[in-house]
Amino acid sequence: MISLEKLSREFYARDAVTVARELLGKLLVHDALEGRTSGYIVEAEAYVGPLDRAAHSYGGKMTRRNRAMFGPPGHAYIYLIYGMYDCFNVVTAEEGSPQAVLIRALEPFEGLELMRRRRGTHDPRKLTSGPGRLTQAMGITRELYGVDLLGDRLYLTAGREVSATEVLATPRINVDYAGEWKDRPWRFVVRDSRYLSA
DNA sequence: TGTCCGATTGGT
DNA sequence: CCAATCGGACAG
Image (cartoon, rainbow, N blue to C red; front, side, top):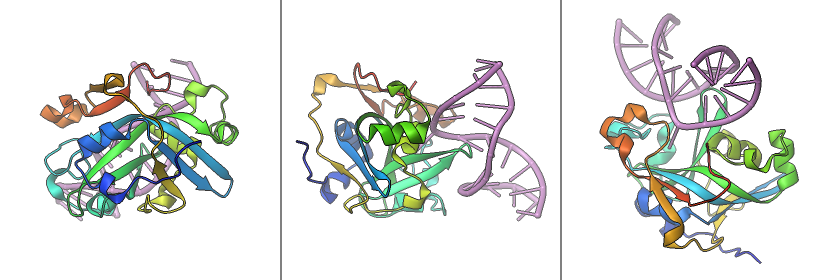
């Protein structure tokens, strides 16, 4: 039986790098009208705020899009990328410190049939292996922008243990424009998972 | 208002 | 390798 205990506000109220690493193994759950889907986080990236050139909050400028990053921790920051895909982030750190963690891949757990229908594929490796894929599989859209992750629609629970030896840190994906910040090892993955992004 | 382009994906 | 597709960011 999985833990129904939601991650606490305190869990999210820390720096994005710490939260990203600790999010590995946690279970992401979306209870939608069509049903529940969930999956274990196997890949996550930290975006640390105003100094981080790769972050949407670079420079400390609050805009319509990144507004949620400046809000209290434990809320959803969701944005559209390339005009086609929604990306899901967890807001971290204290209010006013615009940090977030991008969830990049999951190992599917509940609602596989619903995920297959939404994704239009039966290949388990193509269901939730990528930030745009997992939001589609789980029905996470900008309609959920800013929702409280301690609420009943979209939330995270304890999930499973991931030991330190299973965690691998690498540079973040597709942030070549970020200069010296592109090489920071702030992408965390569960080593050897079959469900990582490309 | 106009232009440029992206924390991606799927098909060639 | 490249097109898809559109809202955000920013210049004017």
